[in-house]
Image (cartoon, rainbow, N blue to C red; front, side, top):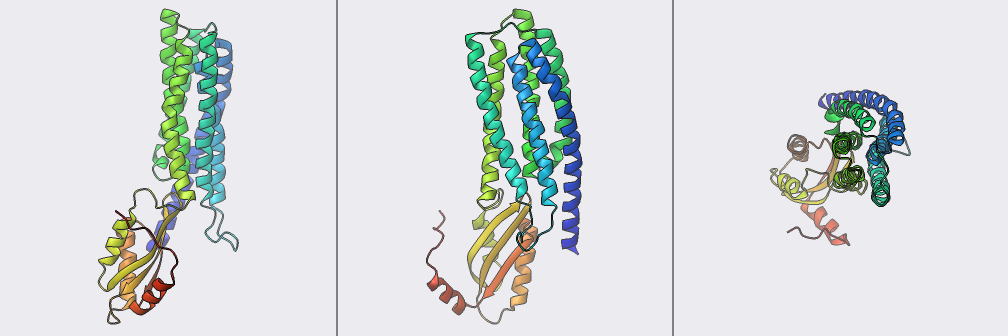
Length: 310
C-alpha cells in the first residue's frame, strides 16, 4: 500500500512539474522574440545576452518537457528500468547549452569593449523590466519542482540566471542613461556569464554523477553500511551499491552475511527494507542474505574490491 502511495505521489509531482514547465515555456518563448528585437534596436549586448539566455531557456524547457513525457513511458523488455534517466540527459544538455552561451557572450563582450556602439538606454530599460517580470513568474512556477527533479532544476537555473540578467541590464540601462558610459553594457554582459557558470557546473556535476551511477547526493555509503551492520543478525555487508535512476529515485543492492542460522532471514530482510526506507528514503532495494560460509566463498572468488574508506 505504501509503495502504491509513493508512485501515486511521484506521478502527481511529475504532472504538476509538466504543467508549470508548459506555462513557463509559453511566457519565455513569447518574450524571447521581443527581447531579441529590442536588443538589436537598442544595440545593447547586455540585452542580447539576456535574449540568448532566453533562447536557451526556451530550448531547455522544451527538452525538459520532452524528457518528462519520455520518462512516463513504461518499462519494457529493452528498457527494464523505464526511461527515467532521460530526465538526467536533459539536465546535462541544459548545462552544456549554458556553457556555450556564456562563451559566446564573453567573445562578443570583448568585441564591444574594443568598439562600443551607441546604446539606446531607455528602450533597453523598458525591455529588461518586462523580462524581469517574466523571469520572476517563471521562477515562482518552477521553484518547487526544482527541489525534487534535476531536470526541472536545470530549467529553474536558466530562468533564475535570466532574472539576474534582467536585473543587470536594468542597472546598466540606468547607469548608461545617467552617465553615457557605453562600456557598462558589455561589462554587465560578462558579469551575467560569469555569475551563471559556477551554478551551471554544479548542475553538470550532479547530472554526470547520476549518469555514472555514483552515490546520490545527500547519501553516504559508509553511513548506510553502518546502519545495515547494526541490524540484529547481520555480521557483514558486501557488494553494497547505491545509485539513482533519476532525481529522487534511488536504488540499492547489497549482500548481508548472517551471524548464525538462528536468525530468520525474513526478519533481517524486513528490518533492512524498513530501515533503508525510513532512514535514507531508499525504497527500491534488492537485498540478498547469505550464510558466513557462502559469503567467504564469494569473497575468495572476487577479483576486485572497494578501496578502504578513510
